[in-house]
Each structure stands twice: as structure tokens, then as C-alpha cells.
Picture 1 (tube, one colour):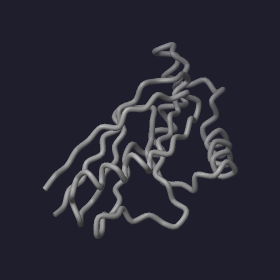
Picture 2 (tube, one colour; picture 1 turned 90 degrees about the vertical axis):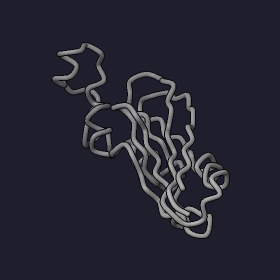
Picture 3 (cartoon, helix red, strand yellow; picture 1 turned 180 degrees about the vertical axis):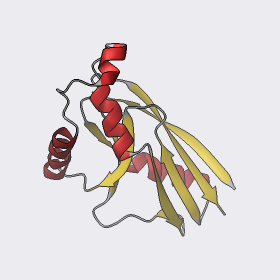
Picture 4 (tube, one colour; picture 1 turned 60 degrees about the horizontal axis):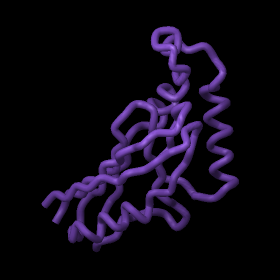
Length: 138
């Protein structure tokens, strides 16, 4: 059995981190699938899906780490070609990846005690995002 649903988000950009755990849990419940896999996917090239402890200190630490690894103020070839100033967001998204797969056991996504599922928007402006949740199992 397969179940798919789309989560719509409005983001602020600039490493906006949005907890989408409640929406994913809702999808799992609606799917009526008991055991399987949940895949959460972000189409587009400047966003990412991951798990993290959704706590202000950890969120800021992640933002700071990404800024150190892929600074937003460098000259990127993407910016030279397209002139949109978001070259850093494409590199960050490539490093963080666009999807996440989570086991679904007895109707519950298996997450660590402090883990939440989050969407990260790396772009240099706010956007409307469509996140795809697909659940496969029985």
C-alpha cells in the first residue's frame, strides 16, 4: 500500500527551520499503514529535510555551523551565472540532502526522544514550499 500527501509551507528563507513533525504524524495516521517507511521529500534545490532537537540553542548552533561551512557572503559561480545571490543556498541544500526516510512501526514514526522532523529553507528570500510525504507499507 502507498499513501502520499503534500504539506504546504510559507518560509522566511535564510536558514528558516520549521518543525513539520505534527504534519508528518498526521499523514502517518491518515495513511492507515501500520508498518513501513515514511519518506519526506523537498522538491527544489534550496531546501532540506532532516531531524534535529527543535530547541532554540541547537537551531542557532546549526545555523552558525552552516554559515561557517558554506558562508553566505562568498562569491559563488551560481551567482555569477544567474545573478540571484543564492549560490550558498544550493550548496547547503546539496550537503544537507532533500529527503529523509523514517521507519514506521505499529503506526508510529520511529524518532529519538528529542528528534523532530524539520524543513530547512536555505534560500535568500521567503518562499512557498510543497513537501511530499510518501508512506509505503502494510
